Amino acid sequence: MGQLQFFTSFPIKPTWYNRTGLYKPTYGGFVDYDLRKSGGKLSLRTLIDHSVVESFGAKGRTCITSRVYPNFAVGSNACIFAFNNGAEDVKIIELTAWEIKKPLMNGI
Figure 1: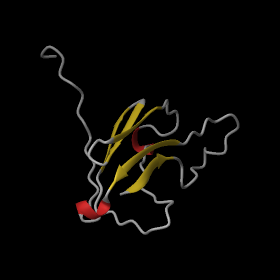
Figure 2: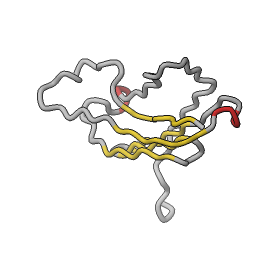
Figure 3: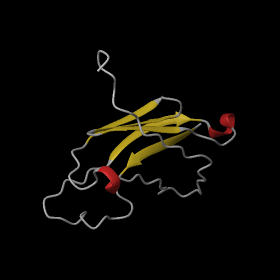
Figure 4: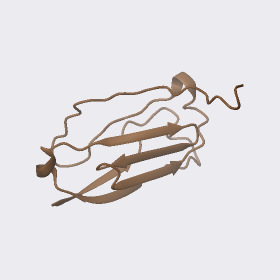
């Protein structure tokens, strides 16, 4: 088994990234996962809900949760990046995104 690391950061610096006083954290999670047993495939699911970003890797065996308060990446300015800082090549086989509707509260 090899140890995989999942992390989020800004691989491509947006124009607002260099603003003074901007908090630019890197988050990480580690999990032991044998890629050979899964045919070399790994799932990563990310849920984004305004101020919360949660990423689940290796079928939920690791989770990264981040609280964010975007001022600039709102609405059509929001984006998501998939990147690899590892030594091996990574191929994204499938990437699917859905927009979740507002909840229906008490029939309203």
